[in-house]
Image (cartoon, rainbow, N blue to C red; front, side, top):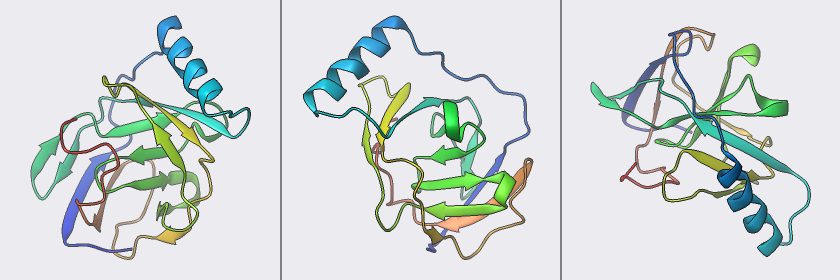
Length: 146
């Protein structure tokens, strides 16, 4: 996995993250019922961690999973997963996961999250702190209108 766009972010910077409401849980429950899904569900909530793409600030693109994968980060702009504890930055490339979000994009309901397998080739040391990497901005599951 590689691309022409340089991304930078600081995972250790103080930040806030969205807290899901009862209404959000009802929306997610309805979605799961309609999709006939019972397991393999991960909720990701939007953070206020700023992302920089080629020197331009992108807000609202960094998410944190709740529960089992809570130490991971998902970046929608570029479609990558950052796993500081494993010093890894990976794309969902093969297998992937199914992602659903309300119009607010404050949270994501992901089915089968956790099976990333295509490593990003050019990046700094992946740690809990400042990092950089290269990927392609065209990989954006949520679209440009975050």
